[in-house]
Length: 139
Length: 86
Image 1 (cartoon, rainbow over the protein chains, first blue to last red):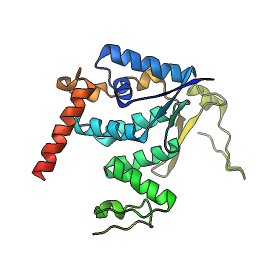
Image 2: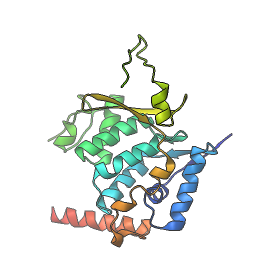
Image 3: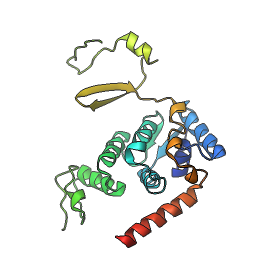
């Protein structure tokens, strides 16, 4: 049985940014092992959130600078998202790119819509977002 | 250019010459998107060499070689400053 690993934010960050040579090399080896089908990997939506947060807030990149790179990573066979379908995360990343809404808010709106829950939020923009019609805010 | 017909199963046949041009073969995955009224089909498995380090050129030199822990702390500081100012 192929071993499955969980990728943390730093591994993905160091894979996408080649600034600390030994860490980049190690991250590349891990991703290559996945591509060569020696191991499988899982990524949490929490890690995606941390990734978009650190790339945006610390590295000051715009969503359209990095969203396609994350999507390309998620398209690698052998990489899957822990909580929901890869395809759904791709959709949520595209919403993030277009709206720059907070990742957690986008994820909550998606879950609320997918499972028929009502989203309780003070954020009118989030609540009115086209993710679903079942949600309403308390403004 | 190639004209294809969408079958009853919503399938189309991709010309071999075009696949060869992109080094694509049977069982390879492709990414399909709608862009500006066009259906764009591109190789899904981007070459790892192209993806590795692809954001490096966007990172200012002052923020290179910064450990993850430090980057996280600085990001938090930036957020806190923003909250205070708001």
